[in-house]
Image (cartoon, rainbow, N blue to C red):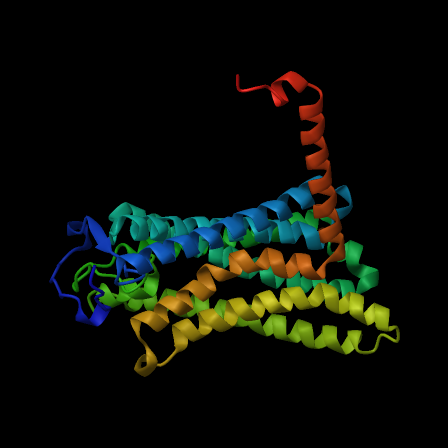
Length: 339
């Protein structure tokens, strides 16, 4: 299938978005071989994300010694990662496998809502996790008071509720805009900025206002993260024991790496100058902030956290032992001859 950038797509004049039954997404490649390669690549990334985040959820849920605020928020982060990967990747894999670009109007609305919901909730959870690290290192004597079980539940619920409200407002406002420039989206999944390019110029200011409000909120979270880590590093560098500094950094560096990857790619994708914009660059950046982090987050957190690695190892050993016990007891069923 030929590759058509957004600016070269035919501009079909439409007075109302209700006349559109489907949208055309940006193809991942222009040849069948590359499409199948992208399908295999996305399949590998999605399986890695499902396995890694599933292991984190299982380890935290089953390991009673991991029932602490840090791992509670990590469990919530894993849930948002699973939501992100399941929102964008399956449709892209389907389109690559079957050589199509179509997505229904309702399917596109669902993608916009769930992507905004999970990505917003993830960002709020990352900010809360930064607060958890700040309290544990800078105010350890007040940790139990400030981050009790009820406070953690309230903060997690606030992150999910804020993400839901943000997604609902953006989805409702975006899909009320009349579209005047066809139905070709310059992205491999449905995303709000590409809808604004299709809307009538005099109607999208309301959505731009909502995006500006969301950007201000995100900037506030970013400033809070920076301030918290400045305080954290000041305290950590004053720890006399090298082992103590190593332990403190081992809990902070994974979170800092996740936040940096998430923010740097997303901010560059949305704020890059139009002069360097191209379909291939936009596609690469969107993969970096919407697909790669959910697959990398479990690896980043598990590599630096000895407790989590030990819990995963124990859980896998118990699981294999149960499988062996199950097969050793009914020997006839496990070793049944095919004859």
